[in-house]
Image (cartoon, rainbow, N blue to C red; front, side, top):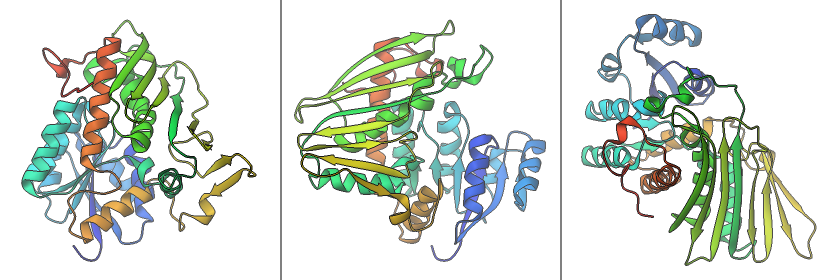
Length: 341
Protein backbone atom coordinates (compact mmCIF):
# COMPACT_ATOMS: atom_id res chain seq x y z
CA UNK A 1 0.00 0.00 0.00
CA UNK A 2 1.38 3.37 -1.02
CA UNK A 3 0.26 6.90 -0.28
CA UNK A 4 -2.56 7.89 2.04
CA UNK A 5 -4.04 5.24 4.33
CA UNK A 6 -7.83 5.54 4.23
CA UNK A 7 -9.58 4.75 7.49
CA UNK A 8 -13.09 3.76 8.39
CA UNK A 9 -14.29 4.22 11.99
CA UNK A 10 -16.74 1.66 13.31
CA UNK A 11 -18.74 3.09 16.28
CA UNK A 12 -19.15 6.66 17.45
CA UNK A 13 -18.49 6.72 21.20
CA UNK A 14 -15.95 8.68 23.20
CA UNK A 15 -12.93 6.55 22.32
CA UNK A 16 -13.82 6.78 18.61
CA UNK A 17 -13.94 10.58 18.91
CA UNK A 18 -10.53 10.75 20.58
CA UNK A 19 -9.04 8.41 17.99
CA UNK A 20 -10.50 10.37 15.08
CA UNK A 21 -9.30 13.69 16.47
CA UNK A 22 -5.74 12.38 16.64
CA UNK A 23 -5.97 10.67 13.26
CA UNK A 24 -7.09 13.84 11.48
CA UNK A 25 -3.72 15.47 12.13
CA UNK A 26 -1.58 12.42 11.35
CA UNK A 27 0.34 12.87 8.07
CA UNK A 28 -0.63 10.37 5.39
CA UNK A 29 -3.95 9.41 6.97
CA UNK A 30 -7.54 10.20 6.05
CA UNK A 31 -10.83 9.23 7.71
CA UNK A 32 -13.15 8.56 4.78
CA UNK A 33 -16.14 6.86 6.44
CA UNK A 34 -17.83 6.18 9.78
CA UNK A 35 -20.52 3.68 10.74
CA UNK A 36 -22.89 3.29 13.65
CA UNK A 37 -25.97 1.18 14.29
CA UNK A 38 -28.06 4.26 13.53
CA UNK A 39 -27.80 6.71 10.64
CA UNK A 40 -28.36 9.66 12.96
CA UNK A 41 -25.38 8.83 15.15
CA UNK A 42 -23.11 8.22 12.18
CA UNK A 43 -24.23 11.44 10.47
CA UNK A 44 -23.63 13.52 13.59
CA UNK A 45 -20.15 12.05 14.02
CA UNK A 46 -19.33 12.61 10.36
CA UNK A 47 -20.43 16.24 10.55
CA UNK A 48 -18.40 16.81 13.71
CA UNK A 49 -15.17 15.55 12.16
CA UNK A 50 -15.70 16.38 8.49
CA UNK A 51 -15.92 12.75 7.36
CA UNK A 52 -17.35 12.43 3.82
CA UNK A 53 -19.47 9.28 4.27
CA UNK A 54 -21.67 8.09 7.14
CA UNK A 55 -23.35 4.69 7.30
CA UNK A 56 -26.18 3.43 9.49
CA UNK A 57 -24.89 -0.13 9.38
CA UNK A 58 -21.55 -1.85 9.83
CA UNK A 59 -22.11 -3.86 6.65
CA UNK A 60 -22.25 -0.70 4.54
CA UNK A 61 -18.94 0.49 5.96
CA UNK A 62 -17.06 -2.74 5.22
CA UNK A 63 -18.51 -2.73 1.68
CA UNK A 64 -16.93 0.68 0.99
CA UNK A 65 -14.16 0.10 -1.56
CA UNK A 66 -12.36 3.28 -0.51
CA UNK A 67 -11.75 2.06 3.07
CA UNK A 68 -8.37 0.41 3.56
CA UNK A 69 -8.46 -0.27 7.30
CA UNK A 70 -11.20 -0.16 9.93
CA UNK A 71 -10.80 1.01 13.50
CA UNK A 72 -13.21 -0.99 15.69
CA UNK A 73 -14.28 1.18 18.64
CA UNK A 74 -17.33 -0.66 19.95
CA UNK A 75 -17.57 -1.95 23.53
CA UNK A 76 -15.42 -5.09 23.77
CA UNK A 77 -18.53 -7.28 23.85
CA UNK A 78 -18.93 -6.52 20.13
CA UNK A 79 -15.26 -6.66 19.12
CA UNK A 80 -15.39 -10.20 17.77
CA UNK A 81 -18.53 -9.58 15.71
CA UNK A 82 -17.35 -6.25 14.31
CA UNK A 83 -13.76 -7.26 13.59
CA UNK A 84 -14.82 -10.54 11.99
CA UNK A 85 -17.25 -8.68 9.72
CA UNK A 86 -14.41 -6.42 8.58
CA UNK A 87 -11.97 -9.27 8.00
CA UNK A 88 -14.51 -11.32 6.09
CA UNK A 89 -15.03 -8.30 3.83
CA UNK A 90 -11.30 -8.06 3.16
CA UNK A 91 -10.58 -5.07 5.40
CA UNK A 92 -7.53 -4.65 7.61
CA UNK A 93 -8.44 -4.05 11.27
CA UNK A 94 -7.25 -2.15 14.31
CA UNK A 95 -9.42 -3.36 17.20
CA UNK A 96 -9.74 -1.66 20.56
CA UNK A 97 -8.72 -3.32 23.81
CA UNK A 98 -9.53 -5.51 25.55
CA UNK A 99 -9.13 -7.41 22.26
CA UNK A 100 -12.28 -9.50 22.84
CA UNK A 101 -14.33 -10.83 25.75
CA UNK A 102 -12.21 -13.96 26.12
CA UNK A 103 -9.28 -15.84 24.61
CA UNK A 104 -11.53 -18.12 22.55
CA UNK A 105 -12.97 -15.13 20.66
CA UNK A 106 -9.51 -13.61 20.24
CA UNK A 107 -8.17 -16.86 18.83
CA UNK A 108 -11.01 -16.94 16.28
CA UNK A 109 -10.14 -13.43 15.07
CA UNK A 110 -6.43 -14.17 14.82
CA UNK A 111 -7.05 -17.35 12.82
CA UNK A 112 -9.43 -15.49 10.50
CA UNK A 113 -6.94 -12.68 9.85
CA UNK A 114 -4.09 -15.11 9.23
CA UNK A 115 -6.22 -17.26 6.92
CA UNK A 116 -7.20 -14.18 4.89
CA UNK A 117 -3.71 -12.65 4.90
CA UNK A 118 -5.05 -9.43 6.42
CA UNK A 119 -3.55 -7.05 8.95
CA UNK A 120 -4.99 -7.26 12.47
CA UNK A 121 -3.77 -5.46 15.57
CA UNK A 122 -5.09 -4.81 19.06
CA UNK A 123 -5.13 -1.08 19.81
CA UNK A 124 -2.67 -1.36 22.69
CA UNK A 125 -1.37 2.18 22.28
CA UNK A 126 0.91 1.78 25.32
CA UNK A 127 3.15 -0.60 23.38
CA UNK A 128 3.56 1.97 20.58
CA UNK A 129 4.37 4.89 22.88
CA UNK A 130 8.03 5.86 22.25
CA UNK A 131 8.65 6.48 25.96
CA UNK A 132 7.50 2.94 26.76
CA UNK A 133 9.57 1.58 23.87
CA UNK A 134 12.67 3.32 25.22
CA UNK A 135 11.95 2.02 28.71
CA UNK A 136 11.58 -1.51 27.36
CA UNK A 137 14.89 -1.23 25.49
CA UNK A 138 16.68 -0.22 28.70
CA UNK A 139 15.17 -3.14 30.60
CA UNK A 140 16.11 -5.62 27.88
CA UNK A 141 19.62 -4.17 27.70
CA UNK A 142 20.05 -4.90 31.41
CA UNK A 143 19.89 -1.34 32.76
CA UNK A 144 18.19 -2.56 35.96
CA UNK A 145 19.53 -6.12 35.92
CA UNK A 146 17.11 -9.03 36.04
CA UNK A 147 13.50 -7.99 36.58
CA UNK A 148 12.13 -9.21 39.89
CA UNK A 149 8.93 -7.24 40.48
CA UNK A 150 6.42 -5.21 38.48
CA UNK A 151 3.76 -3.04 40.06
CA UNK A 152 1.00 -1.21 38.20
CA UNK A 153 -2.51 0.02 38.92
CA UNK A 154 -5.39 1.66 37.09
CA UNK A 155 -8.44 2.73 39.06
CA UNK A 156 -11.09 5.39 38.59
CA UNK A 157 -14.32 6.38 40.29
CA UNK A 158 -17.63 7.01 38.54
CA UNK A 159 -19.89 6.64 40.18
CA UNK A 160 -21.12 3.97 37.79
CA UNK A 161 -24.72 3.03 38.48
CA UNK A 162 -26.29 -0.40 37.82
CA UNK A 163 -27.48 0.81 34.41
CA UNK A 164 -23.97 1.71 33.21
CA UNK A 165 -22.23 -0.56 30.69
CA UNK A 166 -19.42 -1.13 33.19
CA UNK A 167 -21.90 -2.93 35.42
CA UNK A 168 -23.42 -5.09 32.65
CA UNK A 169 -22.03 -8.65 32.29
CA UNK A 170 -23.47 -8.91 28.77
CA UNK A 171 -21.24 -5.99 27.74
CA UNK A 172 -18.15 -7.38 29.43
CA UNK A 173 -18.55 -5.00 32.35
CA UNK A 174 -16.25 -4.58 35.32
CA UNK A 175 -12.84 -3.07 35.95
CA UNK A 176 -10.77 -5.88 34.47
CA UNK A 177 -11.38 -5.62 30.72
CA UNK A 178 -11.66 -1.82 30.63
CA UNK A 179 -8.81 -0.91 32.98
CA UNK A 180 -7.06 -4.06 34.22
CA UNK A 181 -5.96 -4.88 30.69
CA UNK A 182 -3.41 -2.04 30.96
CA UNK A 183 -1.44 -3.28 33.99
CA UNK A 184 -1.71 -6.88 32.76
CA UNK A 185 -0.41 -5.92 29.31
CA UNK A 186 2.35 -3.86 30.94
CA UNK A 187 3.55 -6.89 32.91
CA UNK A 188 3.35 -9.07 29.77
CA UNK A 189 5.47 -6.55 27.86
CA UNK A 190 8.28 -6.98 30.34
CA UNK A 191 8.02 -10.64 31.31
CA UNK A 192 5.77 -12.45 28.85
CA UNK A 193 2.95 -14.78 29.84
CA UNK A 194 2.91 -15.80 33.53
CA UNK A 195 2.66 -19.39 34.67
CA UNK A 196 0.90 -18.51 37.95
CA UNK A 197 -2.17 -16.32 38.48
CA UNK A 198 -3.80 -15.40 41.75
CA UNK A 199 -6.56 -12.82 42.13
CA UNK A 200 -9.11 -11.40 44.53
CA UNK A 201 -11.98 -9.04 43.79
CA UNK A 202 -14.99 -7.14 45.06
CA UNK A 203 -17.95 -8.02 42.83
CA UNK A 204 -21.06 -6.01 42.09
CA UNK A 205 -24.60 -7.38 42.57
CA UNK A 206 -24.63 -7.90 38.78
CA UNK A 207 -21.57 -10.14 39.00
CA UNK A 208 -18.83 -7.94 37.51
CA UNK A 209 -15.64 -6.92 39.27
CA UNK A 210 -15.57 -3.50 40.91
CA UNK A 211 -12.08 -3.80 42.39
CA UNK A 212 -9.53 -6.49 41.51
CA UNK A 213 -6.02 -7.27 42.71
CA UNK A 214 -3.80 -9.70 40.81
CA UNK A 215 -0.56 -11.47 41.67
CA UNK A 216 1.17 -12.97 38.64
CA UNK A 217 4.24 -15.17 38.77
CA UNK A 218 7.00 -16.28 36.38
CA UNK A 219 8.80 -19.33 37.77
CA UNK A 220 11.68 -19.38 35.29
CA UNK A 221 12.39 -15.66 35.71
CA UNK A 222 11.89 -15.64 39.47
CA UNK A 223 9.65 -12.61 39.02
CA UNK A 224 6.21 -11.50 40.16
CA UNK A 225 3.78 -8.69 39.38
CA UNK A 226 1.32 -7.02 41.75
CA UNK A 227 -1.42 -5.39 39.70
CA UNK A 228 -4.78 -3.80 40.46
CA UNK A 229 -7.75 -2.19 38.76
CA UNK A 230 -10.89 -0.52 40.06
CA UNK A 231 -14.02 1.37 39.08
CA UNK A 232 -14.71 2.38 42.69
CA UNK A 233 -11.31 3.80 43.73
CA UNK A 234 -9.12 6.48 42.16
CA UNK A 235 -5.69 4.84 42.28
CA UNK A 236 -2.33 6.53 41.52
CA UNK A 237 -2.20 4.94 38.03
CA UNK A 238 1.56 4.50 38.29
CA UNK A 239 3.95 1.68 37.49
CA UNK A 240 7.32 0.52 38.77
CA UNK A 241 9.77 -2.13 37.59
CA UNK A 242 12.41 -3.33 40.05
CA UNK A 243 15.43 -5.34 39.03
CA UNK A 244 18.55 -6.69 40.66
CA UNK A 245 20.50 -3.52 39.75
CA UNK A 246 17.93 -0.74 39.78
CA UNK A 247 14.38 0.47 39.30
CA UNK A 248 12.27 2.34 36.75
CA UNK A 249 9.31 4.45 37.88
CA UNK A 250 6.53 5.67 35.59
CA UNK A 251 4.31 8.47 36.94
CA UNK A 252 0.53 8.96 36.87
CA UNK A 253 -0.78 7.79 33.50
CA UNK A 254 1.82 5.04 33.06
CA UNK A 255 -0.12 3.64 30.09
CA UNK A 256 0.54 6.83 28.06
CA UNK A 257 3.62 8.29 29.73
CA UNK A 258 5.57 11.40 28.86
CA UNK A 259 8.51 10.48 31.07
CA UNK A 260 10.06 7.86 33.33
CA UNK A 261 12.90 7.84 35.86
CA UNK A 262 15.74 5.32 36.01
CA UNK A 263 17.23 4.68 39.47
CA UNK A 264 20.53 2.80 39.86
CA UNK A 265 22.80 2.41 42.85
CA UNK A 266 25.73 4.80 42.69
CA UNK A 267 24.10 7.00 40.04
CA UNK A 268 21.86 10.06 40.17
CA UNK A 269 18.28 9.41 39.03
CA UNK A 270 18.05 9.74 35.24
CA UNK A 271 14.87 11.11 33.66
CA UNK A 272 13.82 10.25 30.13
CA UNK A 273 11.23 12.57 28.57
CA UNK A 274 8.98 12.46 25.54
CA UNK A 275 10.39 15.69 24.16
CA UNK A 276 13.68 13.93 23.51
CA UNK A 277 12.14 10.76 22.10
CA UNK A 278 8.73 11.01 20.43
CA UNK A 279 9.27 12.89 17.17
CA UNK A 280 6.29 15.22 17.60
CA UNK A 281 3.37 12.80 17.57
CA UNK A 282 0.87 12.49 20.40
CA UNK A 283 -1.57 10.11 22.04
CA UNK A 284 -3.12 7.57 19.71
CA UNK A 285 -1.06 8.73 16.75
CA UNK A 286 1.73 6.33 17.70
CA UNK A 287 -0.45 3.26 17.15
CA UNK A 288 -2.00 4.86 14.06
CA UNK A 289 1.45 5.47 12.61
CA UNK A 290 2.44 1.87 13.35
CA UNK A 291 -0.62 0.56 11.49
CA UNK A 292 0.20 2.77 8.50
CA UNK A 293 3.86 1.67 8.54
CA UNK A 294 2.88 -2.01 8.62
CA UNK A 295 0.33 -1.66 5.82
CA UNK A 296 2.79 0.18 3.58
CA UNK A 297 5.37 -2.54 4.29
CA UNK A 298 2.88 -5.29 3.43
CA UNK A 299 2.97 -6.72 6.96
CA UNK A 300 -0.07 -8.50 8.43
CA UNK A 301 1.08 -8.21 12.06
CA UNK A 302 2.85 -5.50 14.03
CA UNK A 303 6.08 -6.43 15.81
CA UNK A 304 5.17 -3.84 18.47
CA UNK A 305 1.76 -5.39 19.22
CA UNK A 306 2.08 -9.03 18.07
CA UNK A 307 -1.06 -11.11 17.87
CA UNK A 308 0.44 -13.91 19.94
CA UNK A 309 1.00 -11.34 22.68
CA UNK A 310 -2.62 -10.21 22.54
CA UNK A 311 -3.73 -13.83 22.81
CA UNK A 312 -1.49 -14.33 25.84
CA UNK A 313 -2.94 -11.27 27.57
CA UNK A 314 -6.46 -12.56 26.94
CA UNK A 315 -5.53 -15.93 28.46
CA UNK A 316 -4.29 -14.16 31.58
CA UNK A 317 -7.47 -12.09 31.80
CA UNK A 318 -9.49 -15.30 31.46
CA UNK A 319 -7.47 -16.85 34.29
CA UNK A 320 -8.11 -13.83 36.51
CA UNK A 321 -11.84 -14.04 35.85
CA UNK A 322 -11.82 -17.72 36.73
CA UNK A 323 -10.14 -16.94 40.04
CA UNK A 324 -12.58 -14.17 40.99
CA UNK A 325 -15.74 -15.84 39.67
CA UNK A 326 -16.72 -13.43 36.89
CA UNK A 327 -18.43 -14.96 33.86
CA UNK A 328 -20.01 -13.32 30.84
CA UNK A 329 -22.95 -14.76 28.88
CA UNK A 330 -20.72 -14.99 25.81
CA UNK A 331 -18.35 -17.34 27.64
CA UNK A 332 -20.80 -20.20 27.28
CA UNK A 333 -20.48 -23.38 29.36
CA UNK A 334 -17.21 -24.40 30.97
CA UNK A 335 -14.03 -22.35 30.86
CA UNK A 336 -13.87 -18.89 29.36
CA UNK A 337 -11.47 -19.66 26.56
CA UNK A 338 -7.93 -20.94 26.18
CA UNK A 339 -6.59 -20.34 29.69
CA UNK A 340 -3.24 -22.06 30.25
CA UNK A 341 -2.45 -21.09 33.85
